[in-house]
Image (tube, rainbow, N blue to C red; front, side, top):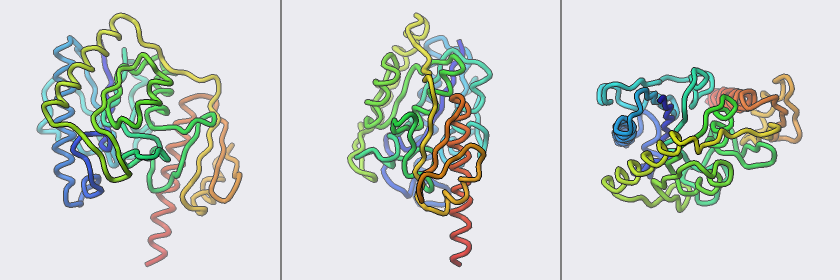
Length: 282
């Protein structure tokens, strides 16, 4: 059996401050330690459940957060950014299931801890078929198109409702509960390990019994609301994109792969726009 694990940061316990989320910030090293610890907990429990092949995708920000020298043996680690299909690169190589760890609520979710969808800097909200989309939903659709179900999602409890709506057979493990954009509640380290181990065991059992279903939609109509009109000025020239107001772009994707690619491209272009504005402002 072969499992793909995408690990983000904002949905992890112990992450409570903007000072933890990027290199150079005062508490970033704490965040790296937490992410590496979670990586090893997940990998060890998968091994305990007879999963022979495990790929861990470092999926936060510049995607070089997990400490390579401290990761347990016998797993493969994906790191580095930018990369095509971002948090789920390599899924097309074929897996029995995917797991999303440390995931957070969609951009625009009340109470979601550091809620965003692919780019907090540039994207205000992102919709698929008028559904306010999270990174979980985009990535689950991409996986589903490849025939890969999502066995487990662990992260901010504010994401649970969307997971249970679209992949009800997926095991959800609450690692924290967002109270505000930069405030959350979480349990202690030993309790986190216990919940993750129980969740992984149940998810693997469901996978082996064939109880998981890949997620697919019949259509993939995208609407993205951007944080600055200048980002929309730049994005509107993408073939097929339609500018509908100062801040919003629409796009009809042919499939989940194209939908995820469009969202990622918009995030990249918007980030370039943010850097340009900052440079011009001195």
